[in-house]
Length: 263
Image 1 (tube, rainbow, N blue to C red):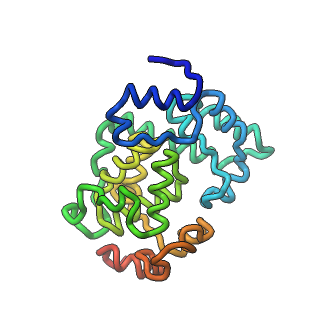
Image 2 (cartoon, rainbow, N blue to C red; image 1 turned 90 degrees about the vertical axis):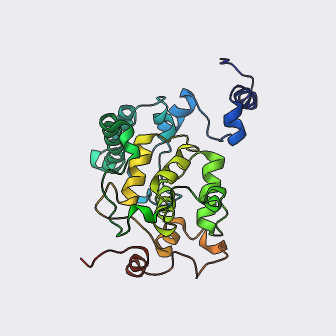
Image 3 (spheres, one colour; image 1 turned 135 degrees about the horizontal axis):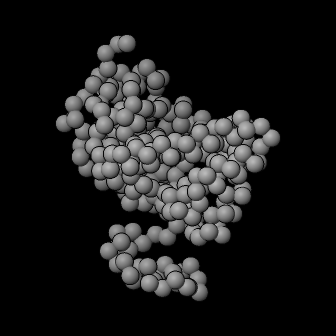
C-alpha cells in the first residue's frame, strides 16, 4: 500500500479507492490527525492535575489520548510517566493514572475472555428478561434523528469526528439500553463502526457496565445530570425540553425504567 501522500485529502481519496465497501458505508474523515508527531503533541499537552477536577464536563481537561493509545502510537506507560513528571505530588495525577489502569484492566480481561466480551457476563439487574430488549439499533438512533438534541448531537459528533467524551458515551449507552430497551451489543457494534479509539475491550465492557451485565446495577441519568456536565448546551436548543425522556428525579426515572425490588 502507498505510504506517502501530498495531502490528507489525497490519503482520504486513496483509502476510499482501496476500501470501497467501507467508504460506501461511511466516507466521513475525522479531523483528528494520526501519526506519531500528532500523538506526541497531544501527549505533551496533558494536564493530569486538572483532569481530576473537571474531566466529567464536556469542556473539561480530558487527554484525548485514546485514539493514539488504541493504535499503538503511544503506550499507557508513556502517558503514566509523563503524568507523574508533570505534577509535584503524584497524588495530583492519581485520577488520570487510574483511568489508564482501567484501560489496562479491560485489555487484560479481553485477553482472558476473547469473544466472550460480546456475551453477557452476568444477568441483567433491570428486572426485565433478555427478550424485552430489541436486538437491532433503531434507525432513528443510528441516523441521529430521535428529536432529542443531546442524543442526536452525540451521534453527529461520533460520525464526524470518531471521538466522544466518556460522559457522552455513558449517556448514549444508557439511552439505548434503558430508555429504548435495546440490547447493549447493538449499541456497542454501532460505536465500534465509528470510534477511532474503539476496541472490543474498553468499548464492550463499558457498555456491559452501563447495561448491568458487568456491574451490580444499571447506570442511567436524568436531565439535571446531563445539563450540568454539558453546561446546558444541548438542552437550551432541544425542542422537547421540559418533556423529554430524561425529566425527573433518579427515583422517578428508576421506577419508570426498571422493575427492581425495593432495596
